[in-house]
Structure formats: structure tokens, C-alpha cells
Image (tube, rainbow, N blue to C red):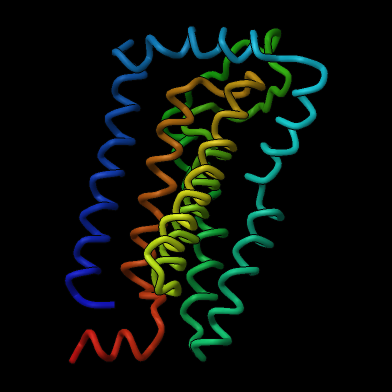
Length: 218
């Protein structure tokens, strides 16, 4: 991974972190985004049905640590073996392990109440901002997208992989609004936080194949 690529990753991580802070400021001061929370909550409730809810629960579960660990290992471990480098595996491990800690720390700092439990299909007891599921799924999706860009040579394959990763994070995050577990702004901040974390770790760990990293330095 070249020095220029690392700088771009750090800049992108900083921008996303700033966006997460901006969402927090908006949510705590009843800004433009916060005004979407109530309509989004109502829209999620209107979509509920006996047939759809089990599917939403299943998709939401993909944002939990066991499922994310399996998905990360399925991509990172084969790349580590193929490239004969520990970096992809360590990158995946850090992304999976640190995202819950980051979201939990932010939750304690912000201490935002959850949506009303009487309207929720899932009502966790910890604070609401940012969404832990959105943070975790976005961090994993971003990490998988980074690894896909590094591993795949075809531009179309890269686009498909990045699109699939983005769809995964989008789906998991939106399930939290459907279930009434989070406000929309919780999810938006979680997406920004998770993506920022994964990009920061990519710049620090540099999970590229050794030959590519060597060539970039030369």
C-alpha cells in the first residue's frame, strides 16, 4: 500500500468521523436530520408484517459479533494464506473486535435514550447513539470492500464486491429502525463511525499483498 493510498485512507476516515460528530450535534440540537427520526420511525412501523419481521430479525443478527467474525474470517484468512502475510487476518480481527468497543464508548459518552419501548419489536437497555449494529456492519463492510479492492483485478468485480458490502451495511442498519431499536440518526452516525474505523485500521495495518506494498515503496 503506497504512502499516497494511506494518506487518502486517513483523510477519508477523518471526514467520516467528522460526519459522525456532525450527526451527533444535529441530533442533540433538533437539526434537519433529527427531524427525519420520527417519520423514519413511523415508516418502519408501517412496513411491519408477520412475514417480514422474522426476515428483518435475521438480517439484523448479521450485525452481531459471531456472524461478523465468520464473514471476516471467510475473506481475510484465505487472503492471509494466499499472500503469506498476517496483515489481512489481523485487519479483520481488529475490525471485528474494536467496532463494538468504539460504539459502546460513544454510547456512554452521548447517553441518548432509545425510541419508546412500547413501539419497539426489540428494546435493548443500553443507550441509543450510535447504533452498534450499524457501526459494526459498516466497519465490516468497509473492511471487506478494502480487501476486495486489494485482491481483485477486475474493475467490474471490484464494483460488485464494494456494492455488495455496502448493501450489507445498509440492510443491517435499516433493520434497526424497522425494529424500533434505534432512531435513523443513530444509524447514520453508526455507518459513519464504522466506516471511519475500518479505513483508519486499513491505513495502520496496511493489509495489502507484500509484493504490492514493496512495489509501491519502490
